[in-house]
Image (cartoon, rainbow, N blue to C red; front, side, top):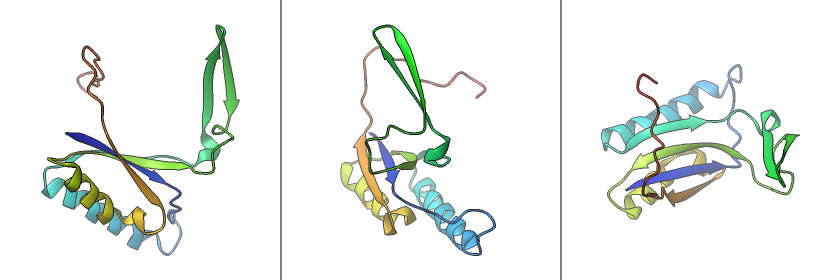
Length: 124
C-alpha cells in the first residue's frame, strides 16, 4: 500500500547555511534507505508557505488569495510517497525521516479511487 508522509513545521537550513551540507546528507540518506527497502516512490520538497497561492471556487466564482490558508498554525514543507507492506513499516520509516526530529510527520494511506486516473503522462 502507498502512504504519504506529510512533513509539517520543519525548518531546514537552506543553501548557503553552514548546516546545509549535513542536513542534505541526512535527507539523502533517508531517501537512500527508503530506496534500499524498495519503498521510495517520490520525495517532494515545497518552497516556503510565503510562495503559496490559495484557490477556491464559491458559487461559480474563482477566489485567488496570496499565501496559504490563513487559519492554520502548521505549514506543510513537503511530502514523501512510500510503498510499504504495512502501516508499521510506514511508521518506522517516518520515524527515520530526519525532519521528524524538529517537525512532525503525518502518515496517511493513499486512497484508491476506482476509475480515478492520476498517473503522470508518459515521458514526465
